[in-house]
Image (tube, rainbow, N blue to C red; front, side):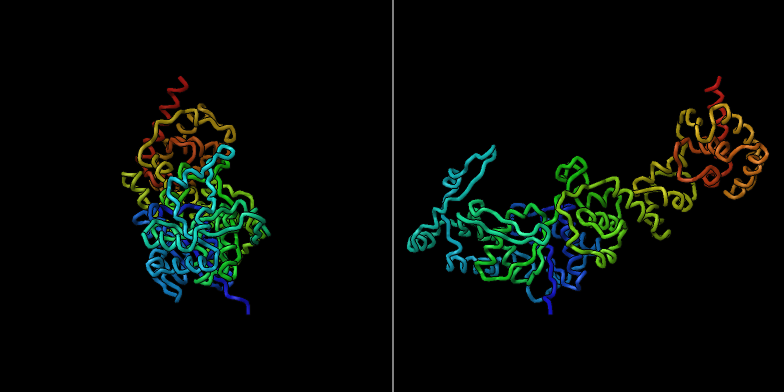
Length: 487
C-alpha cells in the first residue's frame, strides 16, 4: 500500500495571518484531505524576537473560521508531539540531532564573534551579502572542547560543500539544480540554543512523518540545504510543492500597505470566510473547468496540486468582491438578516421595515459595509441634482419628468394602499392610458423618492418602505426642484 499522505501547516506566531500563509494552510489541508490523509498544525515559535503575544490565538481562530480542521496539533496529540517548537527545544530534540550531524562531519561548532562575521560581509551587485568562510570547521577537537568548557558562545553550522551542485525535485518545478558555492554554511542552532527555522523544519517534518511540504516559492533556494540535511541523516525526502508568489494588481509583492494582505483585514472589510477561502484557493490553482465558486467540500474533491501554476498569482480585489457578492446572494435569508441588521441600524434611524430593506440589498451588495451607503436615502432624501431625471435609454428629461410627477401626484394622494403590488398596478393603469413605456414613468418617480442614481429596488418597492406621507413629500420636493431648474 502507498504511504498515507501527511501534510502540515507550520505558522510562526508573529501577527495576523497573511493571505500567502492562509493559502499555504489551505493547500496543505486540501492535499491531505483529497487523499484522506492527515493534516497537522505545528507552531513554529523559535524566532523569539518576532514572537507576538496573542498571535497563536489568531492562528487557531483563523483555522476554525475557515474550516481547516487539523487532525493533530498542540491540543490534539497524534503521538508525535509536542507540536509547539519551543516545547520541543526544552526536550533537547534539536540539539540532539545537531550533535549527531557534528559526529557525522555534516555540521560543526562556530565560535566566531559578531565582529569577525561583520568583516566577512561583501557588497555584490549593490547588495550586502555574507558568506561564511568555514573558519571554525578547521578547529581541532581540543580547541572546540576548550571553548565549550569555558562557556564561549557558539552556533552550530551545517557543513555544506563548496564545489559541485545539488539537485532537488519539486512537484511543480521538476528538478532544480543549485551550485554548491551558493549554499553557504547555514546556522542550525543559534547562540540562544534555539534552532533556526530551516533546521527545525527538517527535523520536525521527519519526526512527524510529513510526506508533502507546501510553501511559497521564495523557499526554492533554501531547498538544497534541506535536502542535504535529509541526506546527511539518511532520511526520506518529502515531496516539495512550492507555490507561486502572490502580487497586488500592480504586480508588486502583496504587502501590509495594500490594506488586504491578511485574513483578518479581509474579514474586517466585510468579506465572508467561505468567500475568502474560495478566492485564496484560486490564487495559483486552476480547476479543470471554468467554474469559480467552490465550497471547501468541493475543493477537497476537486483539488489536484499538479494544477498549481508557477506564474505569480494576482490578488484581484474586484474579483474577490464579486465572489463575496455571490456568496451573499446564496446565503439563507435569516442568516443574512442577522449579519445585515447591525449595518442597517448604523445607517437608518427612522421607523422603517428593516427586514424588507435587507431583502432588497441582499442581491445588490458585494460586502456588508456596502449597505449603509446603499440604504441611507431611506432615512433622509439626499440633495440631488435634477440632471439625474434625464435618462437617454428611458427617454426622459427634466420637462417630461415634471409632467409625469405632476400627473401621478394626485393619483398617489388618492391611493390608500401603499403596498408595492397596489402601487405598481395603479401606475400600470396610468402608463396604459398615457401610452408610454414603463421606464418613462418609473424613472422620474424612483429619482424623486430616492434622490439616487442607483437603488436596491424599484420605485414602488421604495415607496412601500417609505410609506404614504414620506413618499408624497419626496414627490412634491421633486416637482419643486424640477420647476426651479426649468424656470
